[in-house]
Amino acid sequence: MKRDFSLLAGRQFDLLVCGGGIYGAWTAYDAALRGLSVAIVEQGDWASATSSASSKLIHGGLRYLETYDFKLVKKALAERQMLMAIAPHRVWPLRFGVPVYADSRIGTLQMKAGLTLYDFLADNQNPDMVHHYFDGQAFAGRFPFLVSDDLKGGFTYGDAQTDDARLVLELISGAMEAGAVCVNYCKLTGLVETNGRVTGATVQDQLSNTNAEILARQIVNATGQWTAASEQGRGWCRLDKGTHLVMPALLTEEALLLTAKSDGRVFFMIPWYGMTLVGTTDTDYSGDLDHVVVEPKEVAYLLAEANRYLKTAWTEKDVIGSYAGLRVMKHSDDSQPSAASRDWELRTASNGVHYSIGGKFTSAREDAACIVNTVCKLIDVDTPCATRNRTFPWTPEADYARWFVAACTQATRLGIDQESSTWLIRRHGKRVVEVLHMVADKAGLTERITPALPFIFADLLFCARTEMALHLDDLLRRRMPLLILAKLDESVLRRLAEAVAPAMGWDEAAINREIKACLQQLR
Image (tube, rainbow, N blue to C red; front, side, top):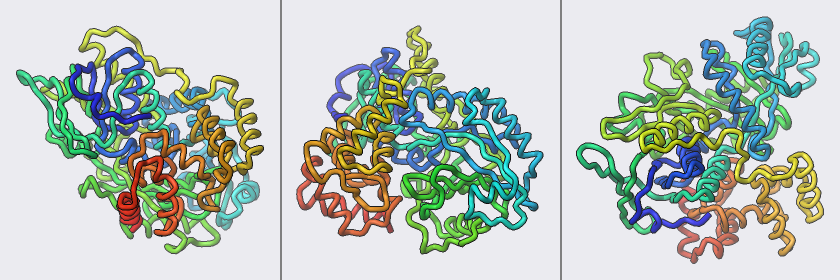
């Protein structure tokens, strides 16, 4: 993946996509596969906003059944099933436990009915995904760290998990392979119009401050939260802030769906890279779009609600990391953000620019197909969607289960521990072979970057060399999320920066700048 700003100028594109999150990435990938000439620009790094601040889930949204949003749930469940099949390295099964206490807002019978409907809407053929009931003793044995007083029983059901930032990155890689010009750190600075219709855009390279004009027959704005701040988007969008905490390891193979006792909201505890994600919050947001920070009251809320279920309470000292992102939802009059619809729509402004509004990470592929269908119709291209049931760019061609075992065996022979091997394969898919070649060529690259987390130095160097990372925080937040999964001090950051400096082309001054920028994020 090589960044080349110069490829944007001096040519006519069928489609310019603005925004490098999940919706922009799927749109560019789909359009390029259909044979359109495509450019996609992102003012920061790929997935640098909401698309790297999700709950890391590919799921139908069990809680939306309460609001009778059956169409949204069915759509998301269909996408979940397909993504698990076409990208097993990127989207893998994750079972959730749901405890039922004597004072639970949703009792056993209502939960049973909801999970039965969830399975029905998913049209589950896989017995590993359907729900099961456990009595109080059995459920407590499955999750021994939960408070067992007044525990009547509980359920487990199947959904799926991903690494959100890497999913976006893989789609960008696929778009490039299909001929798209993909440039991160490239800011949209204006639109070019002729007789009231958009014919292109002006952009600025954030590295060199060089400006360029892009000619495009169609433009799609998939900038998420920045759409809400635009003149067109103010009346279309509502911003909802979601905060997550990274806590010590608690869960390993299964997650938990819990209900906050204070306000009845649903939140999760999820195993992720050996740590535990707790989230999320749902609050209206009207602050700085470029600096969405975790507030102390949000930390206190999540800790308080989690501790209502835990035998051993967490404190603020146990918080390893945190992050916050903004969901864009269609404008609504619902008083609570958690009650607002997560459905998606495409709006077209009077000048012809298309705006992607709302939606879910899980169902972004299908929504992007609708965007590209609209674009194709307007430019008289009659080519159907090419992403449905298409294996991901990094999906191995061989039978995945057998291939996975063989890849793990090879990694073990090279000295990579089992947990790191599993995550290495999930992160890189078939490209893991290239990482293993690096390990074979140089001793010491099997070492974990930090003992508690399953990331090895070969992985870091591979990302630095091949994945269009321009800054240290690109590597340590999105290529591998070390900045939120570990408490990194200046000495560790310097060690990592110096390790990748030759690949990144950094001198001592650049290393110092990159370390300073990361430290500012950690404050």
